[in-house]
Length: 108
Image (tube, rainbow, N blue to C red):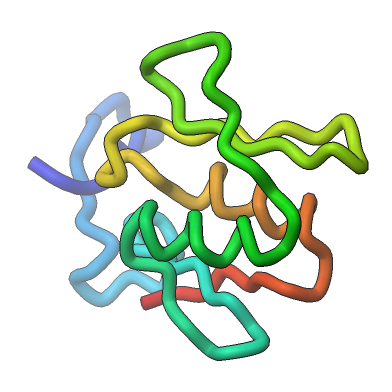
């Protein structure tokens, strides 16, 4: 059951589905967009091509459950879940912050 649990003043708890008429942004899917080309990132292979073109390299140390990139010119490390279906706005905004003016997160 998808939705948001809402606690009412009378002690009743109910699930509200934001896609059914609510103006809340909860539950909206996000997409990472590479601004120079307008490309929407739909897989790690496309993201890797973009990041490598920007000077990022795959980092193979550490956790096997993570897909990681680093830059020799900085201390930044981008860590992403191995499963692309778990790639959400938190990870997208990490990429945006570490690559200013090159990426944008938008609602689908």
